[in-house]
Image (cartoon, rainbow, N blue to C red; front, side, top):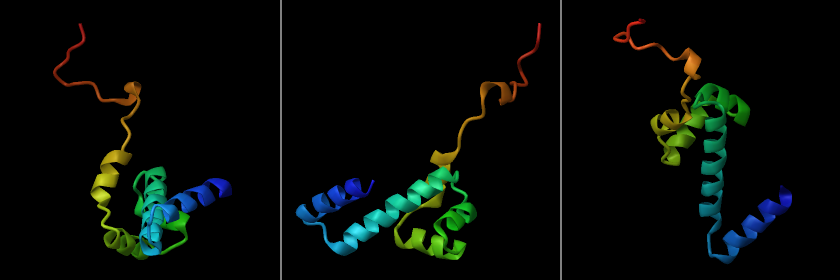
Length: 92
């Protein structure tokens, strides 16, 4: 993994990306990955990141990330057996 990170860093440097932009992009990707893994639960994500939940919220705001969009993509559909049966369908 370290080699992959070094290669990515080298590519970013050679393409002219400046340090602040590279750090910001890393933060966005890292935080989004953790939030998606934690099903957009900010408290659990903050714990995994080892930061306070308010710090995570402030960072999300600073990075321009909308938690509502993250929540919408993080929700999974329940398995077919757990889905509610439509009320208008009657058993024959």
